[in-house]
Image 1 (cartoon, protein in one colour):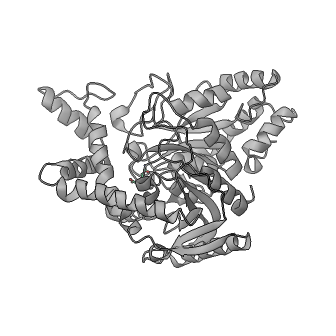
Image 2 (image 1 turned 135 degrees about the vertical axis):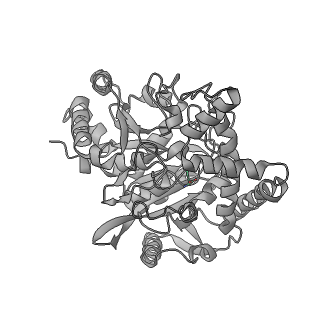
Length: 471
Ligand code: GLN
């Protein structure tokens, strides 16, 4: 029997080499677990029909003596990342029956590494949300308490990892969608530096904010996956090879923006957990230093102007002609209205409306242009602080996983993104680390500790993360 709970990528790679397990054994164990748990958790929307064949291919490479640590590693993929020939739909009705016509850059890379793709995971429609309640295919439930949300928008991917339905997963993060669900499901989630991972083959939400990243059980595993998927791609002009702006060694200083972490709305025990995480870092030899980032709290307002603006533009391609769903009206204009009206869920329509509004000629200056100006200020604030600290610590989320249906008011859900969006606004990397549990209604719920780094300094986040987590 393979103990999936204890398994990591590192361990499994060793097991394959010492012939303790075959790829098929491991894949079968995951498929059995998925069959048992997925009907309730709804982490996967689909298990691919060629998983066993992929496992056999990977086994051949291991038997031939290939050394890559990702060969035969079972990975789940968020439903907004294209795999050639496989259904993909951003959990939206408008893309029902849509099949990917090419491999995303990250998929191409992972195929070369020999990864086994188990299936595609549930998410908020077009990655818009923080609870996976906005999926057209039902909510994903939290394995720690099935009355609660998985987080989102990469909720299915986080549950796959946290619930032992995959060894690792890919998600996407526009304003926290990797880090927040990872924190709700006791996993490690990395939002890489903007552009360090190509967006080719990722369905666009907010193009200046989106990035693909890994969710895994340990920092070491997260690093392995990040190393495999990063790099410049000619199909994404914003991608780069991640050169450091300055070669500065880590001095083990962590900054805490106190005016921000002391805000109202954060649960007292989550705050307490955050302070304990800082204490832990201190005991590991880190200096904890208060830093001033007065513009940072505006990140949320800036995000909820820039993101919908980009959403409204990106989703205009779904017109009932080029992709997926088509609903007939009496003329072309009515085709558009009907297709988009029926195909998009409520939240997608809401954001398209807000985005169109902030970009409209009468309001562009008041909203969009102002938000861009504040964004630049926030970026500068990060740059200044990273001259004196290696990482900035924040809670990942102000609360643990909340009850399904609890945040039906969209604004209350938006507020929950308070600690994650600034990394996307500034384009810097962020990692959420499992940091223990708080109790709610008799259940132990995971809490995340978040560290943000300077552009392209994922290496520092990994070093701090390994110190914090021990692996
Ligand atoms: N929760 C945020 C939102 O709803 C973040 C989404 C994301 O990162 N894709 O916009």
